[in-house]
Image (cartoon, rainbow, N blue to C red; front, side, top):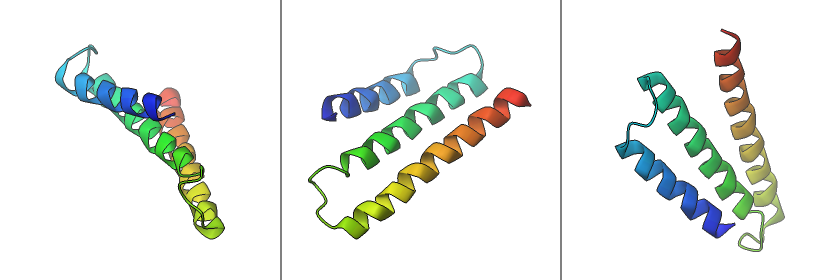
Length: 81
């Protein structure tokens, strides 16, 4: 999981310097989705034995669900508009 997290972080850094998309909007959406995945992976890493407090894990679960829902809503709104 840590290797995927750091690989995705490296991908965001490289994608920020290379113009791989045709439009600026597509580049920004690509960056948004990559950062969203990094945040979700970080939340999932906190569900391991790194955090011992069950109440904090419960709050982290809401954070992860909010991030997924927000990302899904933004991507679907762009898809249908």
